[in-house]
Image (tube, helix red, strand yellow):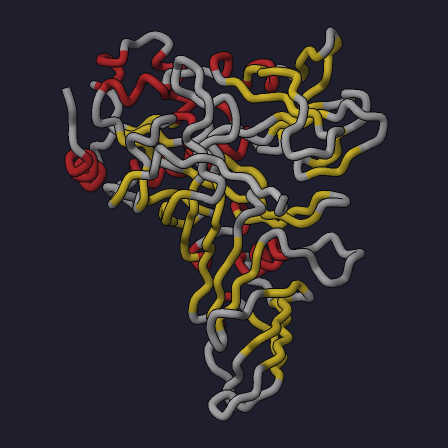
Length: 384
């Protein structure tokens, strides 16, 4: 009992496609068999809205008169990389402003451009015979750029960690403030809503898959950095910690400010809140087996950030149902939990993607290549 992607796309174009969000699918699978559900759904949509600091944008400015070969550049005071073309720039979401007291960085620049705001450019050029201009200054908007697209090296983690602080002083981390003496626990994955946890073995998600990215259409470009599908897994095939990741690309001129937001972590730095939604085509009943998995059967490791080492102590594994309940129990005491991910907005991403598909605005693409399943996670060590 199977169907093809072409069949699903025909249904989409004919207005006959059957789409469930991941949340709807899990509720229905509580009472339906896989075979019964397969007869009722063609696509399941997933979503997340969370900080994704390994993101960035490529901008092409067009040539000045006389031309300039940019070698240093700043956008609203945030350094941009200019080492791969005369007027091409890349700005990373985690790049801080050079004004150290400003809670502002590359993620905010990207969000400002997506929102149609004016961004100040200052550039210093390398003077050559064909590029004689030494410097340039102007104000840009996204409509004045030839290209403005996100190219994100690592997004949409397939599971992540829970951060706690067993020490005696506050710690400011990429998960936010971790209060001393196990004062709180912070997680940043949406659990059962997570795109890659609904396709844990990457059977239907691959290079070339069309997705929701920042309120527009994007694509999976490659495996993400730190892609680690060999992470240990539960019998249900879901990983017990950070595993697969995705490199994503999409036209930022089509994106919406609601789904691309700059953010800042005190004493850590800037990042980017980004909406990502992935449709999972249901080509066989077995595709619904991982989609039926609930938060109580998904786990994440609790990591103590008070030990400043690459490998930190762990308090073991907790389920996402425990995390979402508002507290977990560590060393016999209740520790309150909080998500960095917006669970409400993650559900909204899945719902919007469902509406796009149901209305015929969004068809599914066949991956041109699978994501690798054999990547190890390498680390760095100094010369001995």
